[in-house]
Amino acid sequence: MTTVGAPRSTLAERLRRLLPHEAVIDDPATLLPYAYDASFWSLRQQRLPDVVVVPRTTEDVQRVVRFADETNTPVIARGAGTGQTGGAVAAQGGIVISFARMREVIEIDRANLQAIVRPGLVFNDFQAALAPHGLFFPPDPGSGRACTLGGMAANNASGPHAVRWGTTSAYVLGCEVVLADGSVIWTGGARSKALKSSSGIDLAKLFVGSEGTLGIITTLRLRVQPRPPARAVVLAGYERLEDTVRSLDDLFAAGMLPSTAELLDTSAVTAIQKWQPSLGLPDGEAVLFIEVEGTPDHVLSEVRYVDEIVRKRASVTRFAEDEASVARLWAARSGLAAASALAHPGKHRIFAGEDMAVPLTEIPRTIRRAREIGAELGVAVIFYGHFGDGNVHSAILIDPEDTDEVRRADELADRLHKLAIEVGGTVTGEHGTGAVRSRYMRAEHGDALDLMIRIKKALDPKGILNPGKLYGEMSRGEPL
Image 1 (cartoon, rainbow, N blue to C red):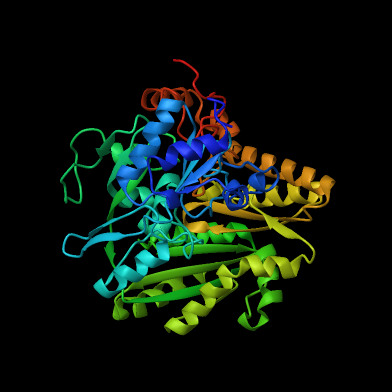
Image 2: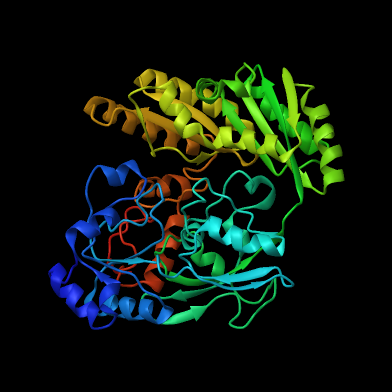
């Protein structure tokens, strides 16, 4: 709850003096969805905010943050709530700012390869707006049908195409940010339309990935790209995980950088085969989906070149060139959640320990060790990932009503996080830190965490912005 001890009704009444009546929510039943995101952490203990506000403008957000600053009340920015780390949940009560009404595409500047948008805009809606201009926004998280661009920026999200196109951070040219005292700044140049700059400290990158703990993004200036007109996929099966790494290295040695290289461990292949046997995925220890894109003539030759390289180590290869076949393969990959449920009846996937990223050369050892830990603990787990950049996902499947199985799943998630650090990786490749992974920050970052905390305290001295997230042992309001 809020540190000022004000009852929920009093907070709501005071906020209604600042905002339109309908923009303030304090009915407990209506607040309930805001107590959760997709994380298993949030599902296990209800964390209701005191009040939710749904602003329409930057000025509305300013009013709320100034009020929070004056009353020492926590304030948490929220997009669609698709996050998997508790990042948009009010861990200590307070005010949740929902960006559900700030969804505008303000401008698409095709000639200058950029767009200006509001943070509540859903990723897929942005793609649909860009499509008539022959453009696209390359980061492509699996939750693209629901997640917002503000949430993507807050967590530096990405997806399968990050190996070639990079993460959200690479596409944020600037942003409008409301700071902890309610003041507003523009990063990336107040009037800039440039695609690059070496002027001053790149403050946009400071706020991207900070999960709303340093400031609240209210507008984004995003770089967009011309959409490649054609694509094709090589599907390759391998007898041993190690050969997938060697194949990828063969592609790099040949000067090839695929747009996507997705890995399905044998556990994922088995699950998908039960769900959609008509795909005929090859047997073995792993399957790779390798996508190339470009002009039609380029793709026609490149997919054959890739096939020629990977078949040296793969036990079987085939490729899909027409869009219907390519889309069918990707639909199978995106249907892994449904496939997991079929493979383990009575179990439910939980989001915990699901997002480690490791050096490419460590992927086989990581997956093998992770399999062993899962077997040791008696917990069902399916492995897959964005192989091209080392992002290994684990789908942990349990009966949430079985308290002992929950305990073992918690231990599995903990050991997976520690395994990632042990092999020279990170506890999160694209989902963020939030509340779930904050306790691993010291182990991963060492003394650099102290500098992060100093930056946090400099920009948010009262600790009101999304407290309880990201910084591990730091307490709200702790003095320098």
